[in-house]
Length: 180
Image 1 (spheres, rainbow, N blue to C red):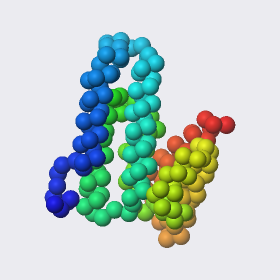
Image 2 (tube, rainbow, N blue to C red):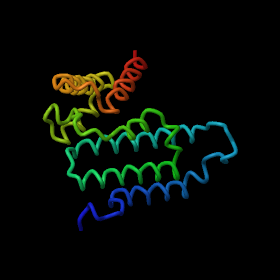
Image 3 (cartoon, one colour):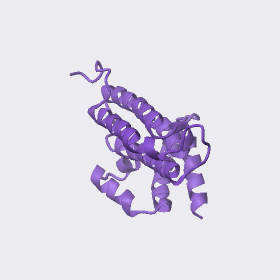
Image 4 (cartoon, rainbow, N blue to C red):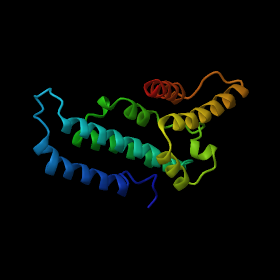
């Protein structure tokens, strides 16, 4: 079936939605405080961390399949919308997840290579590298990719960057400040 004509979410996203619903009904409904309660429990903290991790892993793995065809871009946009909905309705309000949510929203520029592409790594090599590095080293790799993008834009004489560029610089800067 042509992905451009297919308005359904991917099989992965359908499975993720089923798992999130199951997790909410079987576990969270029994563990989380009522919605009227404003207190933050260990369970609330853990669910927030899990929701953030799901977004981060989606971005990580989605970046491994770039560049995308036009049909792939449409599928990715649908999956991202479905992911926001699944996480927001079943785990934690996505708007309250901070940097992982902003990163998901910003994950769209084509000209900005991923560090995977820049370093000519396979998806497996890059994922293993991410797992073996600290946040400061990961940021250095991302920053080098952002610097390459900036040089490419400036060398053409353009003055306008992708909207994700300043956002990634800001997020990376805040990460590096938090670790020092």
